[in-house]
Amino acid sequence: MANLDAELLEAVDRPALRRLVGAFYDDVQQDDLLGPVFAAAIPPAAWDAHLERMTDFWSTVMLGTRSFRGNVFQKHVALAEIADVRPAHFLRWVSLWNANTSKLFPGPVADELQLTAQGIGRNLFYGFFQQFARFIVVDGVAVDYEAV
Image (tube, rainbow, N blue to C red):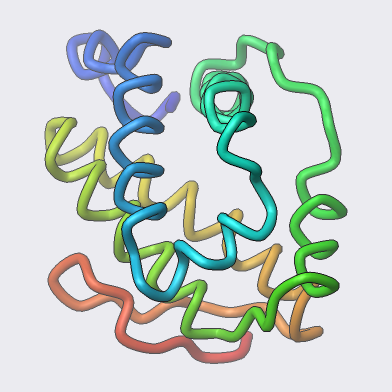
């Protein structure tokens, strides 16, 4: 988040990222499209550990804490074995992430989190569909994508 000034950086710390991860995954679990995919991959008893792991991930990505270790790409692509992941899943994921970041952070911080998530989504999209995607976002909602 080097592009942000020091005052805005104060808005992002591990507790703030944990709130974001918790709110986002609450929405994911309740979502009619994403919920079943995540339910197939994460047993109910494993959600707390997953939320901590995702907080570690976002802390590593955004704050440089190096608290996350793992192969995100491989883990997500393995979902293809248990769920019919389609481009619409990525659009919904981006849209829910955007909604939650916009609710919880000042504009420039939310923008940085959203751009970072879209980059991650672009790479994961490649793992499923062998093409990178640029998500087309209108008013925070990912309405489509184009191959890049």
